[in-house]
Image (cartoon, rainbow, N blue to C red; front, side, top):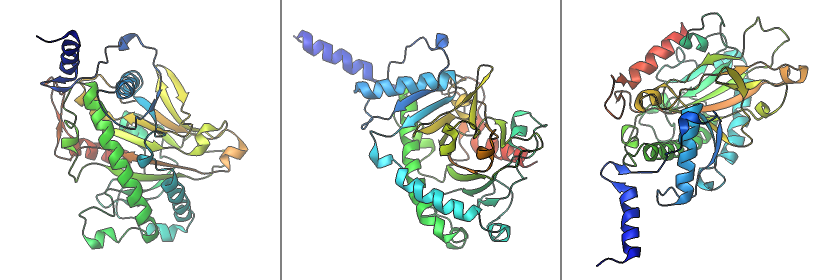
Length: 350
């Protein structure tokens, strides 16, 4: 006959190991929560038996349900911390963007979102149009994109060598860390919805998948910007966006990232964290439970702010292009990930 302690242990196992996979209790009354962009400290070990993991998953789920945004801190996960890599990447990227236009255009391989990535000059994108805003005009940003990790991708040598040589190693290192963080966030998502731990990862890895790195440079501004803002209001297209924001976003008068929470635009202060948001595909995959948060990048409002450029580094994640993303509970129609991305990029370039 089982002792009381043995029965209690058996009950705990049943809670965490069910036929559908790992279950993390996230039974908070989310519908009545005040929308808040939570701060989540990633645990050192992701284990559904640990209280730290359950706490982190609950906060992630609550934040992405109410606002579509969350701030991730990696203090407890030093192997993923990109701080030193980012310092080098920002320095090298600044050198690239301050070089001559002729030099930068050597790395223009086609319209923004083309398969080879590369440089896109200012005056091409109109990201607000992807959310129905045709009035904002072209975005005040130039960028450089890596569609794959230049150190580990299966691209042919000719394509890989087209990128600036000085950026390749540091981009590859950062890309690798973000791939790992993507995998962990996918596992936390699976926990939140009671699925097998690698339910989502199996659609991402091995690649090629939709993961890509964008280095976005917003040049210094004059007082007049023709009523345009640095980056128009929009939602992101795929699954997670993992953003290393500009350090100036935490300062008054410098403009920066804002999120629409309810009917109010809220300034995001990362305070050393990575800003993570759910994109359109998570809305489909979670049956509308998670939001794809509307956000924008505003202009600086002070002379000092206008005199300084802004450099932000978003890492976009997405499953393999042929993945049909639909409600994991089998409700509604699915959308092909690659086709959805293609339509959004086409609209932004229009």
